[in-house]
Image 1 (cartoon, rainbow, N blue to C red):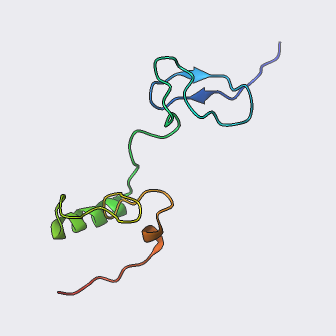
Image 2 (image 1 turned 180 degrees about the vertical axis):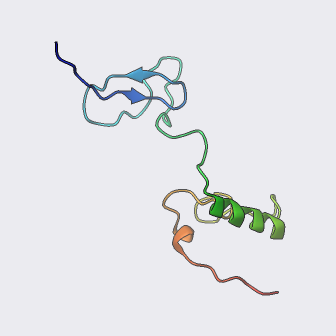
Length: 96
């Protein structure tokens, strides 16, 4: 008897699993009840302790609702989305 291993796609939204037809990543979940386009994106943002510390420090200076989102990616300051240009820029602390 032989053992075979196959790749399985998994929807992070509804938990549906299916065997791929091709090597192309599907645009949406094939589950009739789901059909989400963000099927392969986690429902939460993973944050390192350093990022959390930066975010909490920014919240002390500028509370939510007062322009505390990044103008480039729309994420909360200190918690930038993937590919954000501001994330790679090193900012110098301003003294008031």
